[in-house]
Amino acid sequence: MTTPLDNRIRVFRAEHKISQSDLARAIGVSRKTISTIEVGRFIPSTVIALKIARYFGVTVEDVFSLTDQS
Amino acid sequence: MDDQHTRAELMDRIYTMAAAAALPFAAIMVLDSLQTGAGETTLITGLGWAAKAVMLIVILRGLFLMVRKWRTRVSHTEEPESYSGGVLLKAAGISWLATIVVLLQSHRIFRSDGILGITELPSTQSGDLTAAFMLVVFSLTYFTMNLSTRWAEARDTAS
Image 1 (cartoon, each protein chain N blue to C red):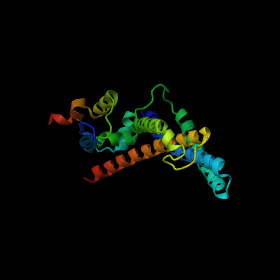
Image 2: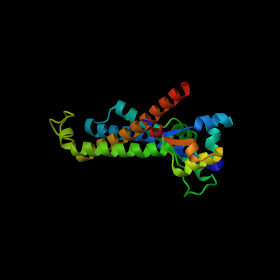
Image 3: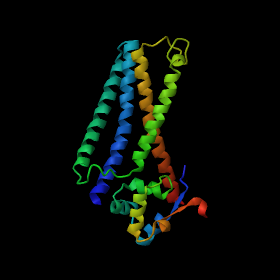
C-alpha cells in the first residue's frame, strides 16, 4: 500500500550525489525510514519533512506533494 | 545528527529483535502446553530447549543493542521517528485484534467438538495457546509488512 504523497527525494539525492544512508545520517533517522518515505510507504512527520527540505535547501512543497494534485 | 542516526538504526534493530523474540517465546508456551497435555517426550523436551536457547540468544542480542542505544548522547525524550517503530505498533494492534476474535470464539475453539477437535482444555493451557497465538500473529505481521516493504523498495530500485 502506498501513501497519497508524492516525493522527489530521489531526484534531490541524485542532484546532491548522496545515498539514502547519507541523508538518514544528516537528519537523524534510520536508512529504512528514508527508503520507505522514498517509495511512498511511510508518511513522514512534519518535523522530518522540514528536516529533509532544509537539508536540500528547498521548501517542503518542492519535496512533497499530494498525489491528487496532478 | 550522527548520534541520532545511530540511535535510529539501533532502535530499528531492537524493534526487529522484539518481533523475533516473540516466536521462540510462543514456541516455549506451546511446548509447555503440549508437555502438560501429552506428557514429557524427548522430542518436546528437545524442542523446548532449542526454543529456550534461541530465546536467550535473541534476548542477549537485544540487551547488547539497548546498551549501545543508551550510550548514544541523545536525549531519551527525543526518540527518532521510525518506519519500523510504526510497523511494530501496527503489528501489535493487529495481533490484539486477532486475539480478541480468538477469545470471543474460544468456546468454539477450545471445547469438545470445537474447531481444534480436542477435548476441553484446562484454562491455563488455553490461556498459553491464546498468548502464543498473539505472539505469532504479532511477529509474522511485523516480518510480513517489512518483507512487503523490501519488495516495494526492490521494485522501486529496479524501475
